[in-house]
Image (cartoon, rainbow, N blue to C red):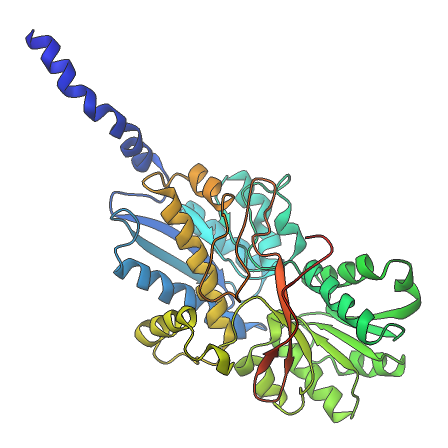
Length: 401
């Protein structure tokens, strides 16, 4: 009888054991913390994006002060890759092999992520919500451990062509693009939407991220008779394009990639009046737009900024971007419960169901599945007024959505 009672007493403790063992054996997870890694361009030619990394850190600090996940705090480790793919490979190896992070979160840049995507998938480390809209981050078959976040650049450019066809159906279109996967996705998206008309109506000009200026490319596009200009450039070069077109008194219908719409990093350096009338697109709320002055979602972001980044520029939308991506990773942590294994982190990242993030525009929700690695697939067009980006029209989806 004594033996039987002892066995019965032990039984209730058995279900808890797998979770305890799993936490102990999961890389980057202890009884008190989970280590999460990232990279950002704190220096180099795209250093305007460095504030995104600061927003990551601030948002995880807020989360920790709320108690973290199941008693565990996030130890967030973010390294500067200077927007250099070789440097990105180096620091990601450090995150995986020395820091032993459980996962990566919102690592920045198309070229940088491309440099280490094969490595990270071979290591089976969750590569969550890549900080790039390259269409490849939806490739769940070849890269099952890497999932995108923002709308793909290909989808975005398809939306722009739909607008162009409505406003200037027969116009000659010029695409100025960064000569990497980021820029090339815009060209591909325009081809998708233009079909047979692409060769007749479209001319292109590219630049390298190491170039000093893009003046010659802008001049050549104007000389080619371009009436509609699509600029797929990172912030430094986007500001140059806006200034140069103004200096030339050239006024094409101008559509600008959404990754370069920051007021502080692009529109102000370019000259706020020089960009009046430029069209872009958004999926996040613009902190300079008066309609979001009392918005609960952005008010939470503002509270995080005030407490953890009091010197941050609250007109800079890159802070909103970093906050939104990190809040998505936090959602995954919550869904994981006590199973923070790499396998479950990836499983939950691919199981988002109508998730609302306070920084996203109304009507835009995150959805993912094992066969959908593009959680955000909708956008809304907006126009620069000289003071703010003003939304117009409804929420749109690209042709491949």
